[in-house]
Image 1 (cartoon, rainbow, N blue to C red):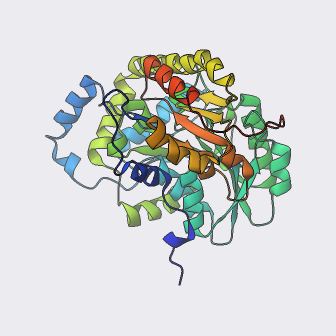
Image 2 (cartoon, rainbow, N blue to C red; image 1 turned 180 degrees about the vertical axis):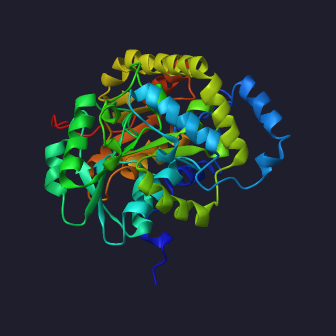
Image 3 (tube, rainbow, N blue to C red; image 1 turned 180 degrees about the horizontal axis):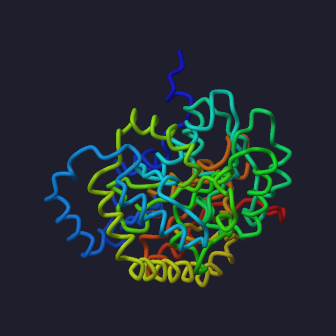
Length: 398
């Protein structure tokens, strides 16, 4: 018998963390952990104070409505309407226990066993894991040399069993920001073919350009096709409180409610109140956080030529991520393990982001740089440049 969880691969981040077991890092070469895209600093002081005040309220400790507290749903709808220049109401919003649950609830609400969902590769591994466990086939959509998917390629993958196309922008793991015209083209394809377009915007607040990343909400009837996913965790440093959201058609919400009611019953009461306070008070703080992440992105861009001399290639850069092609003979899964003991670096191999049959995974690493400043980025690159391992022959292929 194969259980539901046995239908998919081990969780990549915990798996990589196990590589640290029994490894000692000397004081002059501490571990540089670029494996996970989660802020390690606490929320800002004002939010912590607001959370402390919320702890005095009885309602914080009780079940909330399955789809989230009404003030947070209304505030997020208003924020969404302002940001995207469209009409959004509270009935189109569900609050979830993190963005991963938003994705899982969406798939549960729109798919059945044997259905198919199109995922661009390299993909976010938790999306693939949930589809596996849900009995939904992930149809991989290879991306081009710039890690951008092609709507025409997606069209060729559509079958009678296809239910949705998933985009992640800014992308995890690639860091690439999908141009508005490309997102619009996928929306038009989904609308034409009767599919849902699921756009995971976990890292929206770290987009390099101000304003809305697309115009999909500017027209009437957008919610017939579009489902947006969002995370408060990254924007407000609330990862441990598990607060996310999905925005879509009101008719989707009763199905989402069934999922939430049987999995978590409701999102965290304290996390929801923190998210509400953040929406009302932290726009300027989030802008400063975006600027800081942008400075780290710039440091990677400016320092990367030193690695290019050794054959490294920068394939994608944005939000929290750099997706890089390595120059060595060994596969990235072996390389990532060797980096722990030989260079004091914990990074995820490209093999964790593509199907087993996709050879591109062996050539790439994901670097999550949100928790390393410019000095640590310089140290990281110096360690990578000094690696003495045999180089793979170059044929000019990406």
